[in-house]
Length: 80
Image (tube, rainbow, N blue to C red; front, top):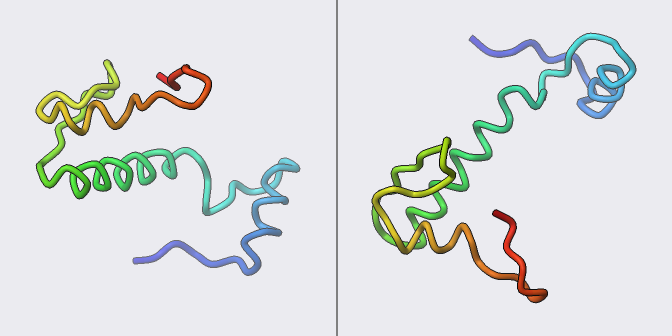
């Protein structure tokens, strides 16, 4: 079973922003898909499985992957 297609995804999103029907590409589930993909990237980069604890925002079994989450940026700050 697939989600119903309503036409132009940009118009669908704009209509949802204006109070219309919720867009099929809503943020309620997109955040989980994004996290899943990014954790998969960490596993590929390190060549090892990744177990992530969302409460602490740490990889619990792979220190190399955990270090990649908190890379310093040019101004010396980290995002986490």
